[in-house]
Image: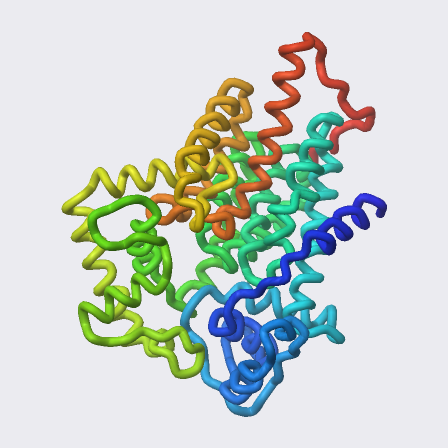
Length: 411
């Protein structure tokens, strides 16, 4: 309880007071307020007008309304709607933004306590506590009311399985459900989910791996096709993370919109009610134009795309890519290389594979900005603890002192 209170207090101390723009948060918050059936994503035009009138500094305290007027949202990933629904149900007296922050703090603290409970040595426990549980950079996203935080869920499942905390068969189906929930919120975590199943096989738990994979695949099959998204906007603007001759000087959304307007004369809009992204035809045309441009750049400059992917992946082993500090690419890359070398030298294979699996979901085409990289920070903290412990052992010649309690019994 003291550790839980400490983590929660640190989250409140370093709380992020910012929010995502209304056009991006409103579909999730309004969708939760108007939920009537699973995967039926209803958002309210009249409530959008009400939300627009709320000052930005008070928006977290606004509770979105269930209204008779609605239209169906078909764009983006649905999972975060269920997160908001859970948060506003538990914390019914709060505004939706504040309710989500409260839920995220509780889930973060619970995951941290679960990991701390199965770490075997004081060095690893203290490293994880300082580098992850109460790290201000981590808490910056824990207290940001958007879906970035929830990419940590599949990472937590992988870490818990790898550390031996999920040996009993009773955890198989809940684990599969957690993996699916994380995937439904952030599909880029798919490779982390697959790594969990591979790890179960590696541990000799074939039946558990088969049951978990079948449950995950069945849930995924049921969800597929309800909503649409595409990587081409992100892939195109991602070229702007590094120098290039194509006029894409930053990985910013508006550069994709600007190119489309220059090419077609049409303006894209993210307005969740009347914006062009709500029109399937306009949305598909936008993706088609950016896909054609990306493939043209790939054909002309394949080494540029490969360079970007390598730099993105290497920086994923550190703090990530800073959009507003282009000079930090070199030290960020060197830090990533150092982390890779230390992880290999100290045999932190599972955490290195975890970071790589997480990064594989987006770094082939987009830089690891901290918002996207957040889930991998758990692996980085665990790898750092293992590296510190291994280097200490090599330096002093002493074996780490394990905890006195026995590991969880196998099923």
